[in-house]
Length: 388
Image (cartoon, rainbow, N blue to C red; front, top):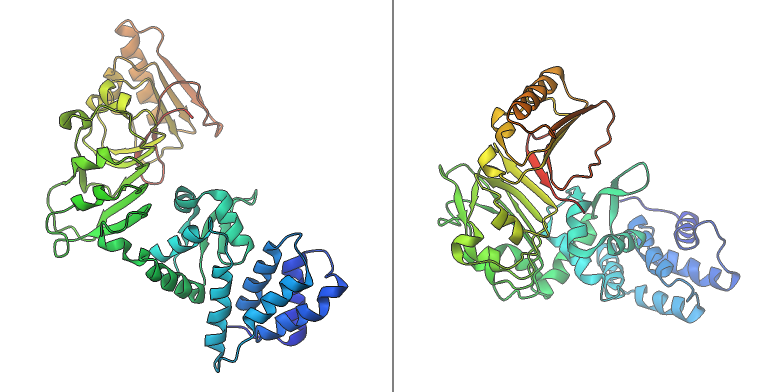
């Protein structure tokens, strides 16, 4: 860790709290005392500054005095003192932010965490708030400033794990139904710990919103069935499964007919999206399927492919789907375009004169049609998207 001298500490604290503004004169002396108590550790200075910044318009001497009093310590080691300051920052978090921060205990040390996963847990606004408080590190941003990946400092992760343990959230991998407030679970299965495959007990967690499952080895030579109870989970919005490993049962086969809250289904194998299934998956916004044939998409209306270079042609079976009205290609190679035109000829010969093939050189990926079927250029997985 980098240690700063007194002048550097104060400059860093002042910049973080007031940004381009100057510190009010009545807070300069106490501000320098706070910076001094951070003992030159840039991490603790940033975290304390984030706490002071969060006070907003409540910039009063008594509140800064309270912070100074809390970080003043007689602890003998720098590590203990740093830990106390970091715990203080967590304790001062609004109740709405504490669960969001504790979810970082679920991710491996030093990992670059996909923001899209975190947004599913706690929302973009809450995540931005944690970043502004310097509790979360920004790894990568879009050109417009939107977060792509974030991380957490090792010392803050220790605090996160400690607090999660106190609240019994650290048991998220044990699938313990005591965990009634758990909203997110990610796990890897193997024959030793899970000889029967996907644990049915997960379906007993009433507040679970996201399930991420994979297989840690290839010991199973068959697809593992996902328990049918999953369909009955009241708040499940995102079911993400490792490719080639899991088979999803049909909700109609087990008597489920109500609308599901499921918004993400990734990845399903050998699953037919019949009209009955689509009536249940009315909230679905993102779907990934592996090696799809015409039987899997009997209601497909449009096929949108953009920048797909890993396949040479569209499977001819896709062209036999009666409901298909459009194939739209963006930046595609000639062989893919030619296969689309052959399908067009086939559709016209069958009397479907309304069928169209549109070819674009732009990256415009917008469509006014009801359903979109997309092949991802990086993974060669197909995505079946519904309109927002």
